[in-house]
Image (tube, rainbow, N blue to C red; front, side, top):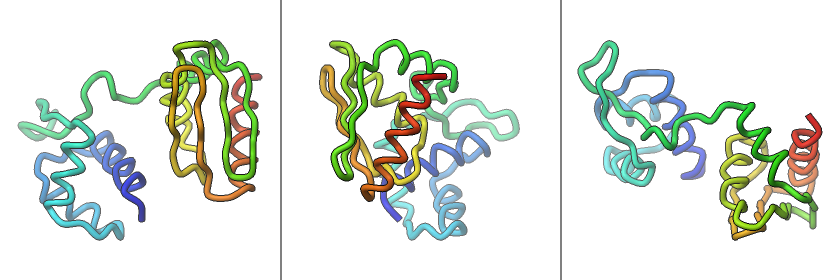
Length: 151
């Protein structure tokens, strides 16, 4: 499994469960089929920018900083409807044109959609390039994004 999928799963785990040690997080990931060591989890925690905060049950737990917490679906849709100009597909690539200065924000919003078959994206000032696993995955992602714009 890819590093990106593992890190997305880590974010899900810490939102659903109170985890306060790297070892505990590594154990949960291992039980789910991820091949990880504590050192791997330590790097993931650093790269994700996780912090420790007061838990409800545990004294402390891993958490995302406020700026990285889940964005509501309504906010994602509003952002995309407001700033996306066009969505085009070329084989397994999707090109999203945005208003000037909004490429990164729209990239974050599309990442929050967790589109099946999307490997990743690169954002510029007014353009977002999305890489899909296949031509079919790209078409599906394009239709999903365009459908979101019409909501």
